[in-house]
Length: 447
Image 1 (tube, one colour):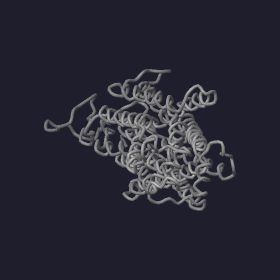
Image 2: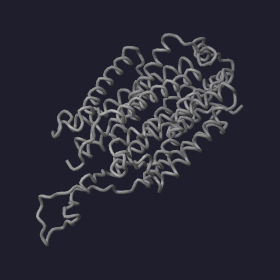
Image 3: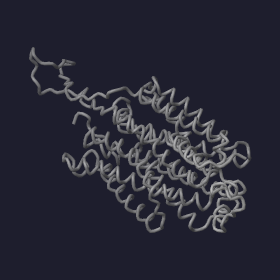
Image 4: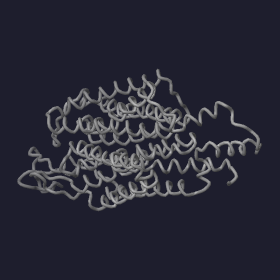
């Protein structure tokens, strides 16, 4: 056996962060480009609901994996390689063809974006039931770095989106009949109406560049996983009772006869999947996880356009990108400050949900939400999205750590199942409400 080296811990934690990059590449990565896509594609404000339903349809991935797992047809390692391949193909399809549309049932649809988002969502949805159980093979101090990487899957694209800048072409095709035409005007005449180009804002680089960046992130994640799975020094950081005894002995000044304290033996046994039981505490934790994903990954993302765009395209842009930064920020806080008491978890859930209710009310009142036309109304909306995502994300991080410590691989499998159940149910409900009722109304682009 290879001698234990404390540097292995740091190296594997770094790979864990990189591996986490690929976990939510569609839901948090692709989503931050939504302010630009709504300006270009025919679905407009409703585009978020269509992307949400494509993401949730990808839950067929976890179902297929569950069947393969039960019948021992596929290992976690093979499943991860397959979904990474699917995600890579989807990213390549987005580059250059994301704006290709097709008329379906008399309406123009962004068919390539739908299919590519579905492919990326296979990675997202299946990662909940594959990535987390795989990370449970490693010692507990590698789980939080992975969760940080999971958050960075939204953080890094958000930084790129901030660098890309704001797109606002809402005035591009709006007639202005009150202006007088003179020979000195710098506007152009179209169908006897003047189109002003002075208010348009263009991004610094195209969506193609953004999608290339997503491809790079996914490839980095895939390479990190391959190294974690193949390198012998990474295997030394995995959980195995006999291995852990030897490694702990080596770490403690290389005293060969040193024994593991009884409490550490209990911890190891708790990580054994055979000891997992559905206690009341487990059900409560899984319920918190399901609710958190119901809102953050299922219902609420589709409401961003309706809650923010009435204020301005700038508000929509900053709400999406800064909320994307809040997710990894919450995970990073969890790395240094772990508070897992039931009172704190319940309080975070209630406060975050309360903020979510305010956002929901603003979306329902669209295109005339509260505080419309005021500067503080815009600030409140952006702050609401950021604080809402941060609170719920921190809660989910603590729940993941608690489940991993108490139940190991099997607990993390059910944690992933709860994530996908919550996200799928939230996405399905909000899609039906947006597209088959008149509760959420799109505003007039020309004001």
